[in-house]
Amino acid sequence: MENPVWLAPLAGITVPPVRLFFRSLGAGLVHTEMVSCAGLLHNSSKTFSMLRVLDGERPVVLQLFSGEKRTLARGAEKALSCYAFDAIGINMACPMPKVTKKGAGSSLLERPQEAGEMVRALVGLGVPVWVKIRKIPISSPLDTVSFTGMLLDAGASHICIHGRYPFQKYGGTSDREVVLDAAKRFPGRIAASGDVFSPEDAKTMLDGGCSAVFVARGAFKDPFLIPSVLHACGFSVDPRFLTLSSGSRIEMMISLGERIFEDEGEKAAIVLLKRFLSGIFRGLPGASRFRQAVSRSANWVEMITTLEDWKASSERGEQCDRR
Ligand SMILES: Cc1cc2nc3c(=O)[nH]c(=O)nc-3n(C[C@H](O)[C@H](O)[C@H](O)COP(=O)(O)O)c2cc1C
Image (cartoon, rainbow, N blue to C red):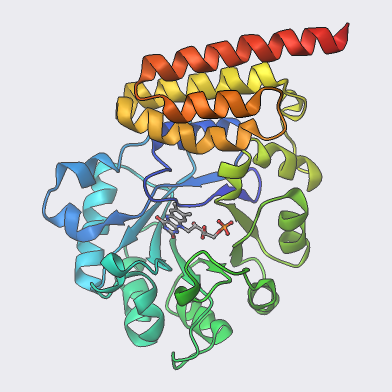
């Protein structure tokens, strides 16, 4: 990996054009959204389409979920026969009932024995096995550091810890101390997830001994966060990305939207662009008018017209400022 600032797995969001966009901004590695092993075994075309990878994305980690080790292993084999992913990640973090009621995601944190067996089921496949967990619930037989150690003993190469209990979902604050404790105990093996919203947040976790940070909702708040984090943490970054004008930012968002449209269709382009644009509006002149126009856009033509309009207006504003 070129650097330790990585794009987190984000269901419904980290589709190939989005991953490529963040790789081009300098992310050291990207994750797929979580993919259902049951879906792969049922030959679901929708699930298989989630295995697509574009040129220029690698390194890419495929994140899988399953509540059962044989399904996990067979799903992983099928996926690897479609594409040589750089690592397989097991999702033991998702707290959503549609995942946990199948025994997958964060419900595995309550079943350390099975969680370890899931790692062992993938170790022979010839790619590194990674696991993403959350802060371990009090009701589990192991605490976070012991659970992490157990996964590493089972053969996992790398563990990402999101410092929230599953019941917290995305609320409250992420517990940095629990992640840093594990990072000190297992140097080079622990990545941090949770509340990475600024270069300072990332620096705290990297300086504290984490081997990487996962940027998740921070990328919605500011799609250009990754270059600033890289710069603040002393990693190489294309200097163009540190001084982007608002016009260039909007231009890059338009290109991202067009790529999503080509790859995933109009609906995905509109939904995803709205998500990333909310972070771009902050602090820009005329933002509220354009924010409303973007949120009203019902099709791509309306969206692109608004964005082109906004780009022209912000370029006029910047020219006036320069004069
Ligand atoms: C919309 C959304 C989708 C997510 N999808 C996944 C997923 O597919 N797999 C996963 O392990 N975590 C997923 N997460 C969790 C994030 O990867 C990350 O761990 C979490 O948001 C905490 O980081 P943050 O506080 O910096 O956002 C998702 C989070 C959000 C907000």
